[in-house]
Length: 246
Image (tube, rainbow, N blue to C red; front, side):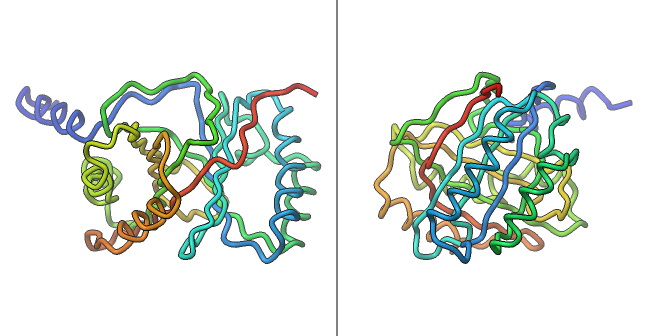
């Protein structure tokens, strides 16, 4: 049993780290796409056909497709999907049509890095919001993918995420910027090929693209602690989708 002192310390540490109670009826997908070996129009066509199929599945809530044109961007596209259950094809329960869509993507040379995540922390300590929201054309994001040695525990990662994942640095650079909203921490639950253990999604209401790409480059120049590596990109919203029954 934890002592009273230890309990208070753990609670203070969780508050400092922005850890909040996850929503029991929300699961999230981040799917990172390295720069595809095809024209944007072809990528968008394939992605749209696949997404419209998912959009009509029960438990789907919404998605935001992020796009980056930055010269140093490793992942040109990042897809973010919200569902109210993992009983859907994108979370390891494929059906024949979904498998066919994945085969078509592979033929085009797409190399996605998907993962199912839970939302575990907010930089500002705000409660998590279950309501799906459309993002406007002015919405901008810094998305940080995080890898870490298996020897580093989830407790240590989540206690130190603001520092180790460079989120403190991002907020320091944007201090006083009224367009900065919040940074949310997502923890990997499962993936066919695990890649990023965590993802941080920092939302801005707007930012000049040149300024945003420069900030992402600056973030990537900062050193992490031993055993932790991050990649940050600057993104705009390419499109939104919400549940639509066939």
